[in-house]
Image 1 (cartoon, rainbow, N blue to C red):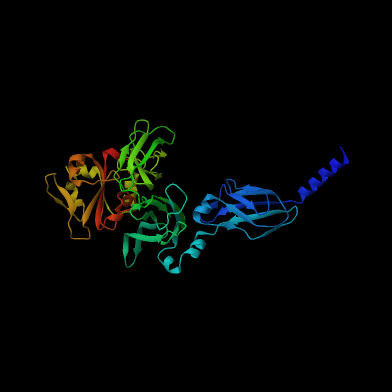
Image 2 (image 1 turned 90 degrees about the vertical axis):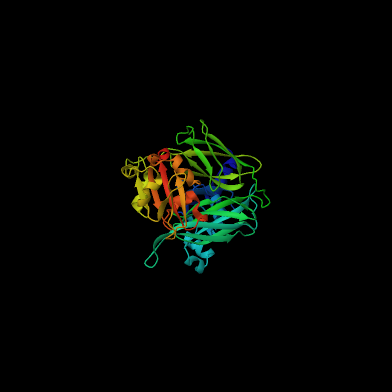
Length: 441
């Protein structure tokens, strides 16, 4: 080995020994877990790091000196976070331990929401309203949030209440909804002119801060939409699920999957929308989709079968859970049989606030008007039922396995969401479960 070559090896080894190393972890303080798949960049260094499943990373070959570290991740962009450290002094050959953490939800909310807004609720929702086919902002869009929350207090008692919050998207498309009650489950939509997205779910039950991106069609979109969604419905083993019902949330468009699980929905509004999938033996499943005007949106939806307890084998575990929580009247098939009911209205003595009226369709239930109720909503097998007059002919009492009755102000949010009850005021609800959906509500 020549002296020149040996000197080169010794020089390279000495130079490498002068380089520093960073080891650490990236923490998502909002959701209380590691931030997986984040890219960590060191200023002035060519090497980068990638956080693993535990949020840990390692970066070698960092030149000595002062460097900043930045974290890049799609979730940070979605939340509007910028995570960059101050300058860190890396000594030659040193290994620096670094913890990189996002602000906590409450810290971030405190920076963006006023004290007055936080008096109405300590949670918040951030997001972006973007154009339908690009990441450009949908300028001038308005955002509307709605949720049904439980109100309890010595002076007000215990009841459900609908809360709404409005916000305007900034010129860059960003928005923040402040003053959301803790743990709320609600929906959010964006509007501009005569176009609107669907009502997209926002879940704050496990975090104080949530994010959502809404895609909005151009405000000159014609009312007759040409949006198409095609897809396939499978079970958790990948096998097709035939005859599942696919419905546009908040709309009348609905179809049934074929024997190989495929479906097509046409004439849909453009932008961010929600599909609801109903199938006997499976819990109701929701699937977000962006409906485009130029080409069909393609989705794949997996359903997971739900084990049903013996008690819930007919009425379903949801019925049992809501009955145990109270707040309504619950009637099972045994009671219907014992009362020898022929029509649903024959159960009227068990339903306070309702009376039975004769009609050409058989006896019909309606509010007595002596209380707050001014209308009666029908939910049949978890779906909005628009024509109560047809109910007696389609569903005699012998085909009913369970009835839930809620007076105004006491309708559970999970049932209100299925009916899109936001647009109905002073209504009571009958949630009726038939042999068609036994065990799945």
